[in-house]
Image (cartoon, rainbow, N blue to C red):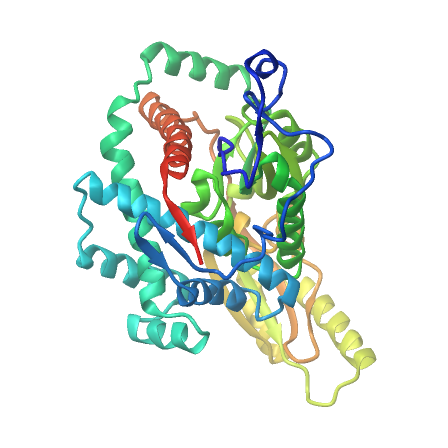
Length: 438
């Protein structure tokens, strides 16, 4: 989770001591009828900065922004691009502060470590080698150096937290046992796996941040990558893992977020939601019940029977052919007989006995889970792909989970507490930084 950060105010009046206790901002008092002197708009500036002597250039911003543009297939308006550019600049400033603090603490991240992580990103996210990754980044207007710098920032911050924060986090046995008792008492209640994008907002910047968050939501609904946006723009500690909060219960969320999450369905996006210190965007990755077997974790044995359509076939003809095909397959006496029936129809059969129901598309997932062995789903497909039918051959249902072990839960609680301290740590770095904008 996150803790709202403090940002520098463009200008403020300091109240006398007698008024300080009455102001909601503490000793900072901002009158309702604010008058701005001069034309220096802090939100209109070129995207360059000097952070404690280290330069963040316009090229740095452009190359990092190119990753987001590519994730959205270039579908970003000019106004949105300006807002995202400022957000990228803020993120690069934070990244610079994290790298500087790690260096000050004598933490050295070798180039070999960065290159290894870069290769892993290329393999896992792009299914290609580093040479192809280099070419892709250059093609979209970014660079290998830009992504490697982001990796350096994440590794530096993680290592710094391991040295300066983690050793001072202590979760007692009593705390863990109390949480285990709560989990057992909560058996059967819902758990949510949520993604979040958190944008911090001071009182004077609230409207602008809200507009930024609204634009991000629009881009995500148009097909933007939630993980990519979270990594680039979220100011929560979960940004490094694409905004993934993991499995949590509503009681662990602030009231505003719990209310929204309760009504969400997997795959749904909501926001921006106003929370103390800023705005949140939530994405429900999945949902399950505590310590209860989830049917979607069943491992299925399936056969897919496919029949191609001849070129030039009409919609009506295809529907008739699909109906006759489904009727013929349904006449098969289970999975042992379907290959013979399919062969007589000129159809192809593919078998897989390690299919997780959870990995199937939602509309197919629910239908397959209602089948008994030997039964088939209604036909599906298209004029181009032909018609396909799934037959269930077997099913291994999941066992009732015993929940996390003592050690696993203790590690989760430690991680949560470290993340909260990390937000406070970064807040202090921002407060003490000397930042010059060009």
